[in-house]
Image (cartoon, rainbow, N blue to C red):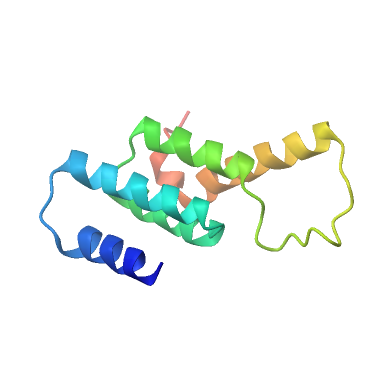
Length: 110
């Protein structure tokens, strides 16, 4: 696992790659972190990727991740069961909060 972290870190920070290759590397790294259950690291990777590009597909992928990933603070043993509607509303709020709080400058002024 440590070797995988080193590979992705070196590849993303020091290699001269095309934009497409960079996006594919980020996506592979994000998929790896999700498979390891490292949700906070996944959020950090999405933040780094969005610093480089504001592409719609990246935003959609980030929103889908936030809608499905548990929060770090959630303790499953202590969490009270929620109905489906409450859970969906929490996911929506988390998606909206992430995009608005971190990237206000990306949104057009209406």
